[in-house]
Amino acid sequence: MLPKWHVLFGAILALIIWIAAPNTSILYILLFFFSSFLIDFDHYICAVLNTKKYSLGEAFEYHKEMDALDLKRRKKGIKEKGDFHLFHTIEFHILVGILGLYWVGFFYIFLGMMFHSLTDIYSLIYSSEVYRREFLLVNWIYGKIKNNN
Ligand SMILES: [Zn+2]
Image (cartoon, rainbow, N blue to C red; front, side, top):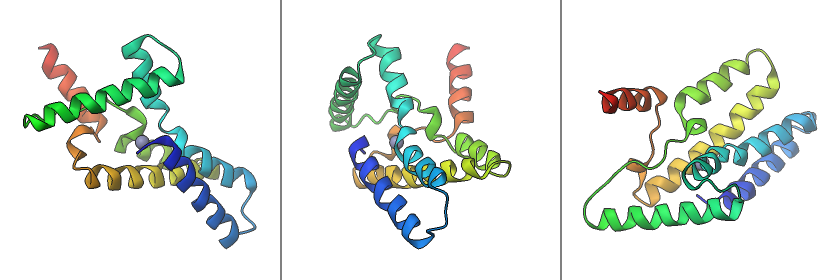
């Protein structure tokens, strides 16, 4: 899902939370809102690592090219995982969730990430691209070890 949609949906839900629970600190509402789309920073990191270019426009272009490449492969019946996105793994969500037990701000970041990931999963299912994502950090590490042997 494109970041602009994450920003829009995150803003709508942040507003709903604010209206439903007006005593919630604005800091927590903002943490929810920003985490609902900044989790995609890992996509930017992947683009920079693969293109050696730091521009956001280049990063969008990179992902467009990767999507086109994947579509071509899919038409040939090849379904491969895309780049690994650390912030989108279950382990990273659990880590932030645990940190939320120590500072409530992390709990709101966790909620923002969860909301983001649910919309991502919906979008991946809708476009039949669930296979592209590695959800488990442990699987990715295992794959790296296996490929190096
Ligand atoms: Zn995402």
